[in-house]
Amino acid sequence: MATYKDIHGFKIQNVSSDPPTSVAGDVWYNSTSGALKVDAGTPVGAWATAGAMNTGRTQLAGAGIQTAALGFGGREGAPAFAYSVLTESYNGTSWTEVNDLNTGRTELGGAGTNTSALAFGGETPAMTANTESWNGTNWTEVNNLNTGRAILAGAGVSNTSSLAFGGYYNPVGTYALTETWNGTNWTEVNDMNTPRGGLAGCGTQTAALAFGSTQPVTYHYAETWNGTNWTIVNDTNEDKGIRGGAGTNTSALAFGGQPTTGATESWNGTNWTELADLSTARYGPGGAGASNSSALAFGGNIGGPPTTATEEWNLTGGVSTITTS
Image (cartoon, rainbow, N blue to C red; front, side, top):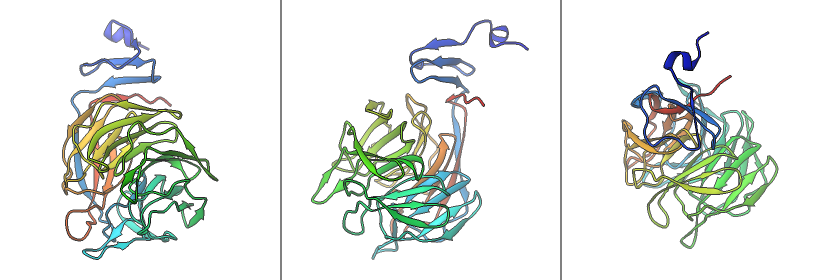
């Protein structure tokens, strides 16, 4: 069988950081991140309309992937908003209402999958530390966050391994706090570099990404988490908060935001690239997805009643991590 060198005349480069520029077909190994990467050409992505939610909500939480997602909590109705207990499950085609949260809330954090998720924090209207665990059928109240807060962000792959970070409290103030969840308790760990609320996040308990904010001001700052510390990385192009987020800390998607926008940006572990906008501009959407090439946006605020609009994102090209089996 022909090797990469046989085909291209040279070996795969071993570098400590991604090259500042590359061309389609370039392959390299990043020894710092331990990732094999490829430039698959100019990124081309598009949003496609998918099955609408049963109930429109804004500033809800999301978990899972594009074809198996969960949306929970948020605000219903306008102008008199209700703190929602609703949970809906998406199967790649349509949304189905499933069992409610025990505590209705908005601006909450979420993590996990559509069968193993965690809901934490939020506004009830008081700031809450309440945490609930989802087993695919029911929500169960479990131990609270150490610090109650709203418009925080979350990351994680299950209801036993999650991360909560940032947030807002009354009277007006923001947190840099980070807490890890082990399935039983929350533990405070190292703070973010910039205190903020209204941020978005994605990734896992040991490899997360945080971006944007609305409190105390609108930031385009981004930070990555390695399981111990937060590191400042390149800013998003859009200066927005209350965005949707999906993916990992090396392959993420940011979409929507306040002031109301459909702006979409792709993160490759080094830089953010602006791509095609959402069809329905909004802020406060729920998000789900495994990478910057496959994501789901649902709900959000478009002015007036929250939208039920759901859109699926698919991307080809760009610099991405090669995953081997």
